[in-house]
Image (cartoon, rainbow, N blue to C red; front, side, top):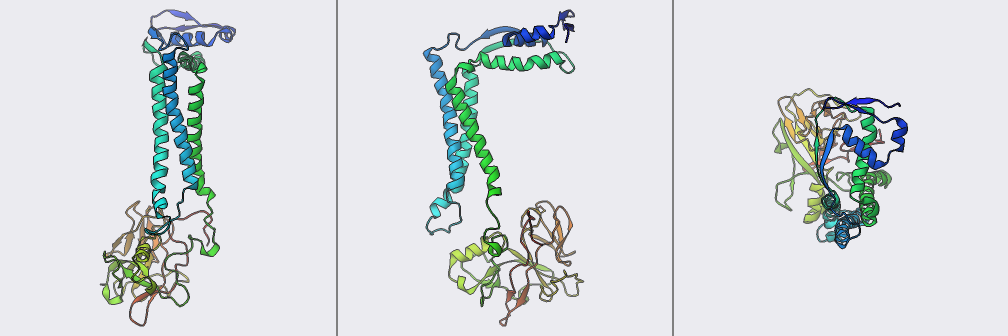
Length: 380
Ligand code: FES
């Protein structure tokens, strides 16, 4: 590049340095040039610590470093807690419940404090070490030219130099540790779901099994939630009007009198089922291989939306559509709950049901496909 000229707002022309001249310029001179090219006039520049190494400067340095160190420690605690804190579900009263119940607060608090302390450290550094500067810049239009682009980085670096960052090793090290550990924490949080093996357990893995799975000789009933803990209300066909819907949960006699187990059956995310009674004479299309999953006009579908897992809590009897309120997916109850609108792409799994000798609805088996949103490596 040869030397040239550039316009200024004052109407005069400034001689531009050649490439050789640019190469010979120090960082400070480049930064100065950048200011001139931008028509910036520095009216006042007051360094916070004009004499390096004073006790006041060291005190300020320690104060800033303290925040970075706290952030680093908190980020480290987050990583350790995220990996090692007991997070497997424990019911109240069970051994380990207190530690389990503290998992989310501990992970949240350590992560939150790491972010907070990092932010405070940066703000404290700017306030304590950046020089007090008053500058005036003339406004000009259009994009920056190449010279401006080449000098702007030098200008930023020079701004850093003004704060004396090069000789503040304590701050550099603590800020580096805080940023590094914080990044590590983010990385661990992002990668952890990929490390845990959802297939652990084979056919018994949680992805395949719901609370509707019966042990040999066990009967799993359809039970409604009355809102009263411990009250058992099994569902019979005559309990429902044509064109109505009921949310039901699995119940086995072994759970009677055990509030924790009953509560768990209601709270397990893949257990809720919509039991729908169609109006008599409604035309129905059944899915191949699932022709006998219904009991007369009664059809049971998983309530967990196959888009992102919200509860599809709404049933529109006029057109037999099941609606998910989250992203408006709609499923046709008369056609094996296949999606007919919205982002869901898979039918709601159907639970095979019948009625036992006492006249109560029972599940004939667990779902024959995975419940909830699609996931990688789904089995056909
Ligand atoms: S979760 Fe149901 S539509 Fe998105």
